[in-house]
Length: 215
Image (cartoon, rainbow, N blue to C red; front, side, top):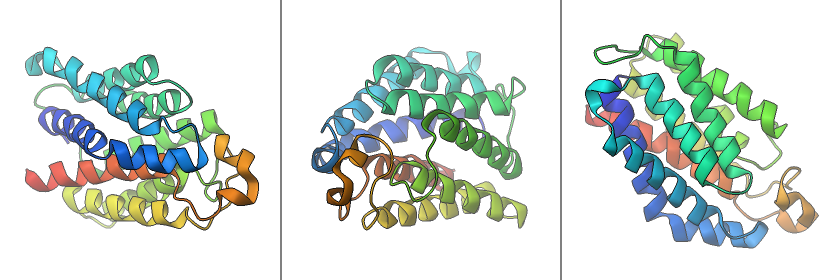
């Protein structure tokens, strides 16, 4: 992970959210407010715009991620902005300020930062796996990335494992009954629907795997 890959990651997420906006909207219309697709597309689109305006030579990995997080918090409404935004900000802060141009972050260091982001996410949302939230995709992705990194896998392989785990976690939300968020108000009626937050989380990790594979 370096500055170029980090910029490409955020840009790829923005493209994925824009491309899948209608799908996310449909998922959220079934068990939420119906605005998740628009929120994700708008938030990551704004983050991409801010990064495009910044000089690559003047940015660092942590700055890119923190800026992305702050943008999501300020632009995205509802719970998604604070949750996704705080996760990105925590990820950048965990990587530290020694991640400027020329710095390369290995898989193990990035795995530790992902774990810190997950901790922040769960601290804010008070959700655990099985609650039918974005944590159901985020937590297995972090575990898969960490396990791959600890086994000696390179960054690309760890990112691909994380993306696969996030997508499996996303699909696993379908039979769950929601216990957090607006979907929890539906009780048993939330069963049978894929969680939109878990879906957008899977897009985030797949976007990382795609840019890592392209290097």
